[in-house]
Length: 153
Image 1 (tube, helix red, strand yellow):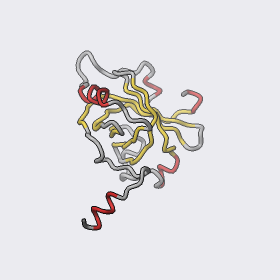
Image 2 (cartoon, rainbow, N blue to C red):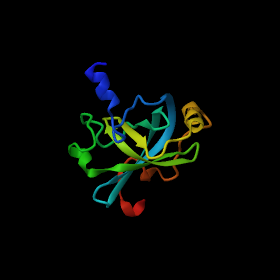
Image 3 (tube, one colour):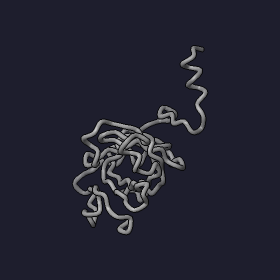
Image 4 (cartoon, rainbow, N blue to C red):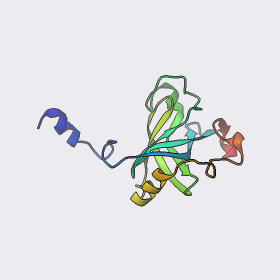
């Protein structure tokens, strides 16, 4: 066994291995709520879950305030102000879950769920596609895709 293969097998439980389970292609609307470290502000982003597994997903949104910046990881410059903890909501299934942000790009947020989702739920979410009768239409559109005081949460 070469050193690269052996080092890959020595990952601790804290390490995030995105290839550790089956990932499904998806195109299901979702909402991710980010809280700023100051505890005074939050942001609820509407977007699309584009890749999904029982342990995590990739969330895509082209309206992120940092979409014109180079991709980064939590802990780098701008992302020092965003708490690693987040909340995800899939409206079409009523699924709520807490998660950790693992990576952030210009248009993608990679999250790892705190508790694994059931395989059947993951397959259901992956099979949901927007259509004429199925769209994400938030009641209060002014609440999404912008930074707001925590009191409006």
